[in-house]
Length: 192
Image (cartoon, rainbow, N blue to C red; front, side, top):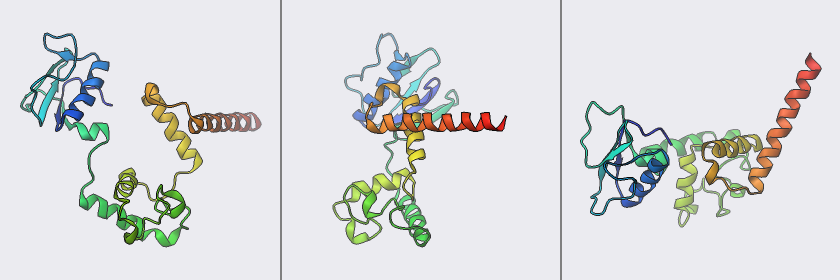
């Protein structure tokens, strides 16, 4: 999440508002003359929240030149829906690259989907739309390598240490990182 100081953010729903205010409270923000950042009773949506330099939060604001930046909360939280144009561009890119790789490497391949269907075939989209959109939202067209997965897991941990589960995947990411660091060290000692 970005530093909220001197930004204006559009929130469309109560859920978005609640998630944003939790993050704001972590950053030390509070409603003017209150010591917290809890959702306000009677707040109407959509709403625009302004996060001031002095850590005050104001709602129902209009956007002016005094804001450094303006965002939609869905952009910051990663919940923004993909447009039809964005989806089609992504799908065309996947389809265009299809002949250059095997299905095991493809993000839409049977082995790489939760539904165990090839999602490159439109007849398999029925009942799998949410998974397809989730895949498309990632922007990827190939399955991440173990190294890419490890980097992503470690970056997520660095960004949000309190939200990372210490599961087998995370432990494997740490092991891979240590192996790569050892390789670099050994190569460095050989080259010196």
